[in-house]
Image 1 (tube, rainbow, N blue to C red):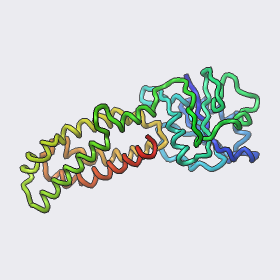
Image 2: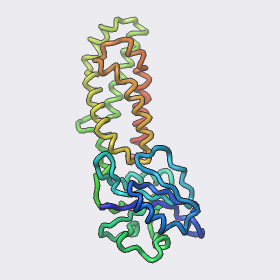
Image 3: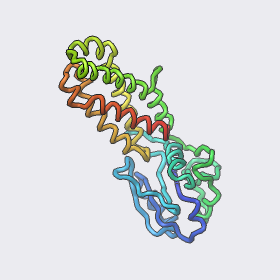
Image 4: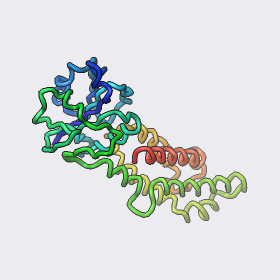
Length: 273
């Protein structure tokens, strides 16, 4: 069942026109319908699809962002309302997230597309801001907020950042053994890298990454994951080769990239998860 997320800043209420409307949808006809409804209140209108091919324009105080939900990506219908609300709470706290769909629900932040008010923009004035404590109405789809939490928390005892921290610590010790103490690489591998199960840990991380990334294509900060993915795959050859090639240890910048990857994921987790 389809719904829409409508985001706009409360301050536009005191103005006659919003500066622009940004529509994110994979159903052009529905996007056109919303454009017709709100075009009289906007100076411009633009369309985007998910995953975002480029960063959205920075939301101004009187902008509107409409997102079709659930979003159909990678053969899944996804519910992303809560993730977008958390993003707005951090970056645009006075913005409003409004669910608009065909499900039966009553809420100040929900707009029933089957029973549109005569003046839809004016009816939105009673909605709550994204900084307020409330939970968006959902009309179906896989909850991406839960997927995000599960990605970071893991399925066992260790979170993804904890595992990366352990791997980074071992690799730093290995680097010091090779450079400071001039140890033989095969000895370091046999006594440090393999006993700490680095190849196995990497396989688990890689499986987790590949499983969850398709869900995260619906997120406003997916491009952050995409950039971290470049680090992930750049350092992968050393671990997928069973940590057997000393040249790969240095060529992949193993320690440096693991640290960048850990720090980048911690930043996302602390901000949004």
